[in-house]
Length: 109
Image (cartoon, rainbow, N blue to C red; front, side, top):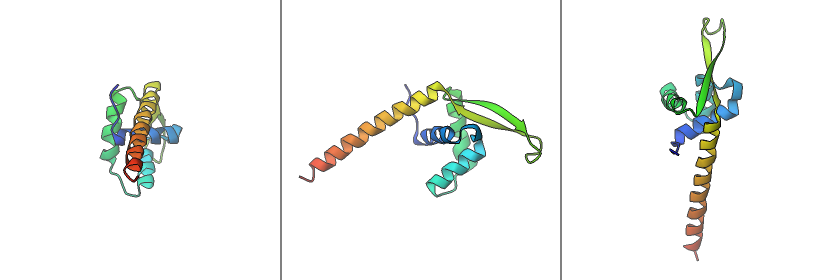
């Protein structure tokens, strides 16, 4: 299994949180609010395309709206492969944090 970059993981988690509202602009807004800084569209769009090509997310088009000039939103959803990748990333991250905390607790004795 290929591991996710931090940004890819953040995007997958945002998609899981936003569910049926998970389109590019909403994903960027959610991540920007969490991170406390404005992300560019490219900072989200490029890794989003990459994880879509890897099959970690699937996309479908929503209804067109007058607000968007008749354009439809591309809505993303996690695939089973995307969920598995998130679980694997969390498992590795948890193990690294556990090892780090053990090592630093021992060095204070």
